[in-house]
Structures are given as C-alpha cells and as structure tokens.
Image 1: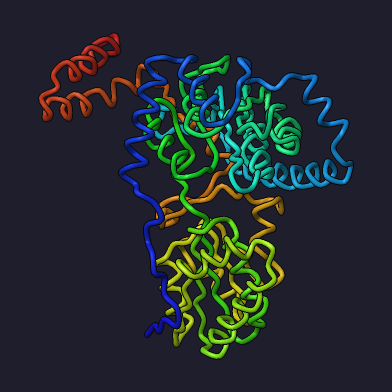
Image 2: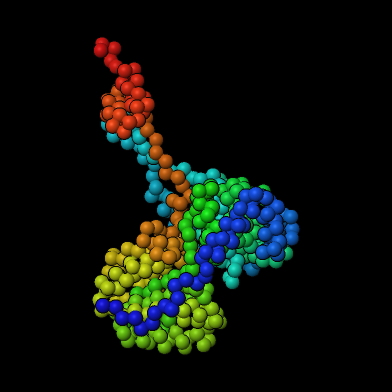
Length: 426
C-alpha cells in the first residue's frame, strides 16, 4: 500500500500542441528556403548575425589557450572515463558468422554510421558535459564525421567550455547554432554541414519536438523531456542527503520531477523538512524550489517489493538507491535510464563524467529503451551466402511459402535455382 505525503500538482509543463505547430512551421520554412531560413531563425532566435556558423580553427586554438588548465584537465578526465566505458561496451559487440546448415552461412556486422550530428543545449545552463557524452562516444564507435552544434553564447559563438569539450571529444566541425534550426541544419545538411544519419542530444521542448518530426529524415537517439530523478531510500541514509540529491536534480528546470519512495515514514517526513531548509540557501533555489513544489513527490510504502513496483511504474530517467539492501534493488529493478547504487553514488557523477552516458530516456520511455551508448552509433546489419547445394535444398520451402502468400514471382526466384543447381545426373 502506498501513501503520498506529497504529490505532484502538475503533469504537463507546456502547451504541446502549440510547440508541435511552431516546430512544424519552422521545419517547413527550412525545407523550402534552406540556408536562408536557417540564417533568418539564427538572427531572430540566437541573435547570430554572422553569415558563417562554423567555429574556425583559430577560435578553437584561442579558446584552448585561454581556458584554465584545471578545467581542461577535468574535461580530459571525464572524457577518458566516458570513452573508456564506451570502448568496453563496444568490445562486447562482436561480428557474427555462423553456418546454420551445411552450405548456408550468414552473420551480422556492426557498421558505424557515416555522419553523427551532436547537439549540446545552452539554455539556463550550458551543458558542457553533453559534448563528451555525444561526440566522445561517436568517436569510439568509429563514426568518420562528427558534427557538433551548440547555441552561440555571444558574438564569438559557442560557449568556450563547450567548444573545447566538443573539440577534445573528437568533433570534426563545430557550429554556433541552436534550437530547432540546429537540428534541421544537421538533418538536412545545411549551412555547410553534411546531412546527418543520426542526430543526438537533449534540449528544450522545441528541440525534442524537432527531433520527433525529423525522425525518418534521419535517425534520432530518443525523445527527451525534462530531467527526472527517483530515489529509493530507507532509514540507513540521512534525510539531509536525500534532500540534497533531490534538489541536485530539481535545479535542471522548473518542470523537472523529483520523487522519493521510501519504506520509512520517519525519513519521508524528515526529508520534506530538509528540502525546505536547504531551499533557503540553495543558490539555484528559485528553479529547484518551483520544480519541487509543482512536480515533487514523496511516497511511503510498506515493503521493498512495493518500492520496486512503483519505481518500475514511474520508469524514471535517473534512479538512485540508498538503502541497507542495495543489492536487492540492483537485482530486481527493471525500468530506469541509469541506476545509481549506494549513497556514495550521486546522479551528478553520471551527469558530468563518471563514465556512463547522461543522455537518457524520460517520460517513462525507460520501459522500452535505455540511454545513449556506443551501440546507438552502429548499424547491426545481416548478410547471407549459400552454396548451390544449400540453395537447392531450401528452394522448395521458400517457393511453397511464397505461393501460400500469392507472391508467385518470389516463388519463381526459388524455383529457377532449384532447377539450375540440380545434380548433373538428374
């Protein structure tokens, strides 16, 4: 039995129909007018007046010279963590060759996509680490051409830290362009970009909707909404730490849900008090406080089984477990974007560079997909090769199945091989 001590007062943070209509209008204009439309939207929305969008090598070198060494070392550290994990994932994906029957050989190959378009948003926070998560993993996958896009921060273009991170991660070209127009430019191959096979990266509702409408023109990683976090905790952890981690994710935006599921009413009540206390001094408390007030939830359950049931029902982007029975939850939980096990493991580590990817499913999509990983940049394609003897053996089966469907031309392709490969003495 679940008891809500606090429940979300809102489920929709924006007018989805208005967003759909606005994005559709923008994409239609870009399809019709190409580069001219991109420049118009960039001027009006990004305040970017330059006819060129690509960041020059001189600008990249200048940024690299002027950024603090500590920052650059931190980015390189996080990049190595993410790429080492992606490389280990890649090593689990082996090409396959198998002879199912004598003379019938088939298999699969993992082939990198040719062009990946990686988007890093600006918004309230320039999510520098996003460039590592997208371009850095694409590089490990072996994508030969990686395009990075981020909104211009000022007249110099991309936020310097983001520019450095994109370059360090392996982006071959980087453009100062944001929002819907950035996704469209990558998908259609405009303003000097190659047309992307896959576009990747989080963003605001307009960016997410642009990806949805562009799917089919190119592939997408996933449709990401506001950041979510769910914590399962018990009396083994202090309420102050639970509150800190809830607010650590709530600061993403005023529509970012943060949920606590606990077997301890005492912890639940103490966490409610702690959140309010910490909001008084939290530098980003205005944003985090609104997210907590409108989307925060605290649920008390009687058993660990109920906690698992609720967590799987919510299927949250981030799922954090801080209990005396962490291994139980690691074994039994099913629906999450990424799981953070134990009080020593905060979600911020995954966000910024512990090694796993922070581009994760939201809106209960974790029921059917995981987050971005090296395999997303690979196509797993099958092949087959038959000897004449194996071809003749399977031909009658394929012919009869084809005839049962009324597909007689299919049947003939099998029949002619049956006849062609007949033994000489028949």
